[in-house]
Amino acid sequence: MAKLVADTYGQALFELALKSNALDAVADEVAFVRTIILENKELLTILTHPKIGTQEKINVVENIFKGKVSDMIMGLMVTMIDKSRAGSIVKVFDYFLESADEYRLIGHADVISAMELTQDFKEKINAKLIATTKYKSFKIKYTVDEDIIGGLIIRIGDRVVDSSVRTKLDKISKELLSVNV
Image (tube, rainbow, N blue to C red; front, side, top):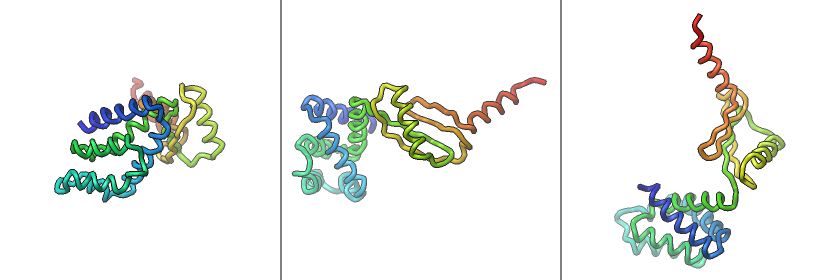
């Protein structure tokens, strides 16, 4: 249910930003508000607390954000609070930001390696991803996982390229176990 709420509100915000020709500005505001909410857990607690009235929650949001973000973002947050959907605000913003990046052909990738990669190697990975996908640029999250022994695991959305030594050893092991002597 929460995913449906996030998708519905996020898509509506995305379409409104496109229609208003303000995608970049709205994305900046969404990122700003999202950061404030995530860095201040008390704010989300207030917005979702069942014993705090709707108008009080709206007043809190207006006191914090009015004049700092557009009426579009304020309207969305007030509507979500009014509809008891404040707990999904961050998910809505995540959906919007992912949609905006997809529209602007900015890909998201997770790269897992057995050891920290050099900046030069990271640039080569970025260039290879750009050359082999539809995206013009990438936001890449690098993670070190010594358990993969060597190689890389690259995840873009639901696609995974696993060239880790651990996976290759697992594959060889399964092949050897299935051989009848």
